[in-house]
Image 1 (cartoon, helix red, strand yellow):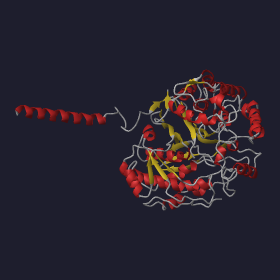
Image 2 (cartoon, one colour; image 1 turned 45 degrees about the horizontal axis):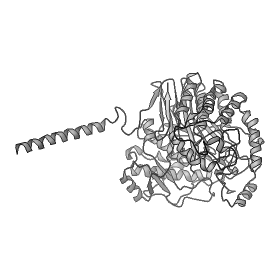
Image 3 (cartoon, helix red, strand yellow; image 1 turned 135 degrees about the vertical axis):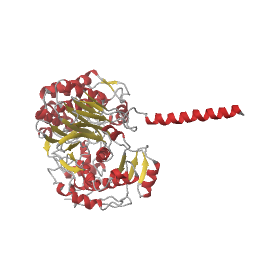
Length: 579
């Protein structure tokens, strides 16, 4: 009996000790910082590069160490990601960037997107579509190919802000193109999904982008000597090699052979545009986006609507907070569907869309139940794959740059000897002749890719972005509210639970189309299931996972400490690094 009492007493002490220690260990899963973050922010004083591929990050960092600035590093890193992550970007696609230039003390925005063929009229396009029975521009057709703007974007950035020769900037990507690089896990998975289908396209896709007819496996060494040769031509001859020289001539011949409409003249006349970024103030932070034919304005509209609610008091990832975020997205996306278009063809009514008064009127539509019948508040006058990267240097310059082929590896049309696939951005034109985003010759289609930038008290604060098609405005707003409303650091903000909403009207629809149901809400699996139940009770259709929640990079500048903080996407292959 005495032994039994002693044994029970001993077991109670042991169990109590174990419970105490389990609690203690739960509190110290991380030695410092929030428990729900995958890793600490990267901190450096002299420069920072954050990209979706570790080798591209190192190439950008090398440029900074060699005396190049943030603009040089961004171009170098973008060239490398085009080689190493062809599932998301490449020189067959377009580019947008926002740049903080320390010396001039100004913020600049570049629209380096390309235009539709001058030789293809709306009527001719409709006749082509009727012939194949298509009701929209097919994703993997030469009809979806617009002039690639990325290369011109590089040279515009370099001419205005670059500090070292383009030959030095492209050297790292050229080396890896010729000598090979190991393919990372997430990129390999996307590559292997795309390759079997795209290798059937006319041209050189199979010989350029496959190994024995398949996409490369994880860790497999891949080479693209044709792209290396293209980089060498650009380094030696400049942007004219692409738009007025050998490459433009090859593209013209390829298009004529295979029934495409782009011609040498379309490349010869192409140019990027320096544009005034659009902006709004959110709780004391000035948030900047590229406007026009880009969906960045939706970020600003969502923030204006959300500013009228005290999100911090409602709690991160609560049913009430998520409800407000989802409804703000629906409201902004109805305007996005009907009003965002090429500024050369349509005047976007920013004075209304970005006004606090308009936001207040739209905010009144948000109630306790999910909105299911909604149109734009202004009379009208897609999954994609992309990369985002950001750089910063010792002098204070910062770059927010996004670049894309649109659908993964683009169309799969590869001109022999060039080493890149054409984008399919032309798919995002509307065919409604009354729509601001309707197809017209020489016009830029609607774009999903958006670089983001935040200023605080007149100083550069945060260069950030995330890829992911229509998810991108949602991702931008989530990141900013995580930081501004919920006090997260920039790595934690990217690691935090993500949500998505689909089913809104699209810029490719007819101008008279409206949201006619609640749409589909998707939330990552770490969500509290009670929150899911509460959202469903409000009328939201909610599923766990089964969506794409983007990939993020960010650099924050701390002026007081004199350092940069870097963050990258922890769900896949990204890396932030500094020195």
